[in-house]
Image 1 (spheres, rainbow, N blue to C red):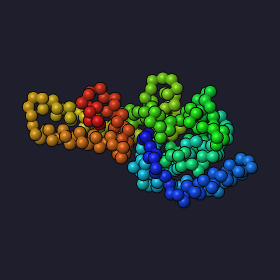
Image 2 (image 1 turned 180 degrees about the vertical axis):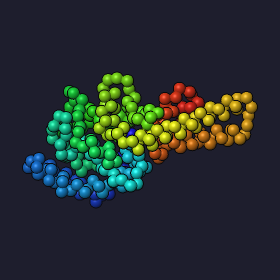
Image 3 (image 1 turned 120 degrees about the vertical axis):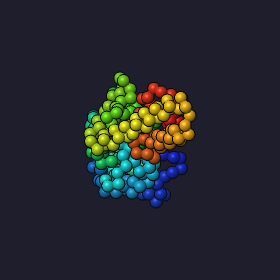
Image 4 (image 1 turned 30 degrees about the horizontal axis):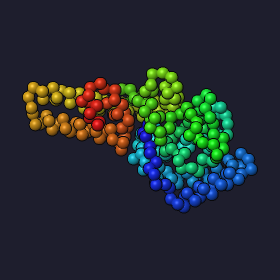
Length: 264
């Protein structure tokens, strides 16, 4: 999962915003839920129009898996479900159906199981209308636009996403999110993550050998190779790189200070 920040001042086009506002006003004036659902269904193409715009925030990566895929259909996922929310069953956040700040870019695999599933922490406030503040809720699922959510995931050598916390509500959030976003259910995704992990290990192991030799005698050739390896590791941890969070996870879990400096 990659942290996504909507920069201040960056919005979809004025024309898109005008249409989104008009549709939201129609939703607010609708007589009942079936009428609202029809408005949403009839205008489902609207959020697809901002897909390319959303991709610019993640360097063309899925916001949940960090995968780049030029041969799959990206989904514009509504983080808060638009028509209904499940577990428990309740009305969805229809007033946010055309709110771009509720959109998340997701690959088709990850969006297949999440759907309208959106449980809240027991006892949490639940927004039920436009005047309620969604920020008062405590969602179970992790949100890639929140820094305090993204840090709850890390990775194992096998490529599997794992909870960063050992127990409690934060661990439950991570584990349920891994399940619902299918972060460990797609073998090609696991293989790609494992490959990144192994690339990090190979580079670090080589650096360790070269540094030990440098301690005994300086070699300009070895020094240049070390610089190149550091540069390659830094590139792997940059957000534009595919699975940069896996590279960060490898480095974060290594206890050696010089390894951690490779991503600084």
